[in-house]
Picture 1 (cartoon, each protein chain N blue to C red):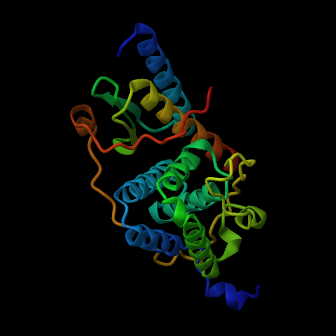
Picture 2 (cartoon, rainbow over the protein chains, first blue to last red):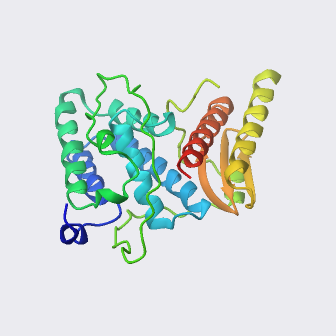
Length: 192
Length: 80
């Protein structure tokens, strides 16, 4: 890929294409359970992003994009249990007769994202990014993809990558006193 | 919680989760807070909520939080 072509690509994973594709699918399906599962998946992705951002190595935009890369690996069966549990929960709420359409939705979303993302700065190898998307017929037990930190050089400043609206975060006191939305990650156990 | 064993397990699990989190946040204020009889557990770093699990069974919530922290710590440690 030439330098001129790379200059037109975003250094951060353009997850908004994936988000929009899944959002449209969920809306068109009209299932409240699917909508709830999609909401939980987004919370899990945001939790990953907050963890990365808290480290201070990446800012919020970069952390969010990296977390969505984790989500892609989960969709391809190559992520650790917390994110894999989220995608399994989502798949569990997709009406069986809509399974082929959901795979197509994911495929189109990821392809659209990669079409405008510079692969030089992505965390995961091309072989992992091209791995088949998994469905409920698969076991989601492939070897985990290993991330590699590829720092974004100065001069390749991240372009805007709008983050879906986030909900206000509770204070520690809120957590002690209020029952919050269910956010337990299904399949999160690791047996240790 | 229905048994002392379950309560002890939850405490042990959350202690392990806290220790694990401190590995990658040595200079931060890392706290694990619980509510509703440990049916809700959350990881907070420097006062910012990172992830909250629950309400659910305390064992499930503690397991989920531990798994979340453990796998992310493993990941960022390998990537650094």
